[in-house]
Length: 350
Ligand code: DOR
Ligand code: ZN
Image (cartoon, rainbow, N blue to C red; front, side, top):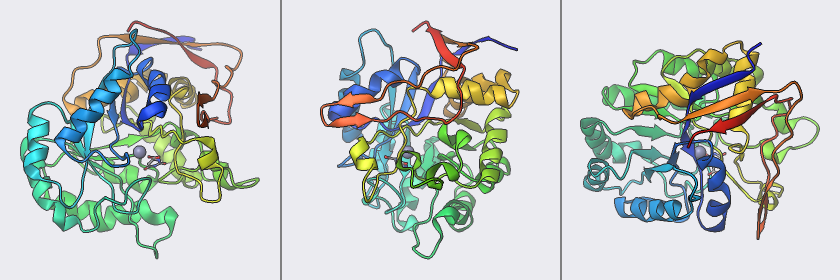
């Protein structure tokens, strides 16, 4: 059995860092294991303009520990008022890497998102022209649609028409959670890709609903039934360049998760690489781990692969779960994968 593995330093193509104290507390967990990360813009207020992105990037950079070299990749939050010229300027200046679609009401801080997709067509037109990736939270928000079907319905009702209207637009279908999501991406050319989270490779909806409501396993899109988890695992471990890691690590204070209306989001970045190594070992595909964490994403985004590296080591004994993150307002719970994890990051050369 393989006990040690060295891979190019990973990147996280979908991450929530927040701001203020939470940013300061969670960022080091990312910057010690990831060279770059796409930072989601769903703050309150959201990161909407080129200038907003510059301001947020400055705040993030000020919180990077001196011993880490980390690059935040900034994303704009798409609204129906977003200016195509501002988006283009941010991209061409190298300050903004992509634009994110939140259907209004789909998830945390999505109220300022998009209700009518036709209103954003002028922005998509410009993005297609300049090669700027369009990142999609792919769930419909109609009350009549069952929450477990929202991703599959989004593909048929929204994604297929957008793809047909903008055939050369680079699209990332974010945090896919279904077999339909996997199959859709597989049916496309390489200008459509998908991120897959760590937790959706590990848990199905039972983790959230069996033995009482388990708020620390609630995220959006919600984990689905087992057949979907298996489809995601097959896609992630296949080496297919259209699938890459987006942790969707989304910190919330425990008191806001353990409440009558608990927040969606799982903080998984503290143990993501160890868990992924365990998953790829289980799938007998450890040789494809590097593609998922470090090679496929840069290829899609036309960025160089990181020259730094990371070594993961396997022990006979399972590793303890990392400690929760303390803040002055309360703690942030680390994702418990509910399985023994024998791997750990033993070295990085950042
Ligand atoms: O679970 C989630 N948490 N899904 C999202 O789409 C947003 C995220 C957050 O910001 O907390
Ligand atoms: Zn997210």
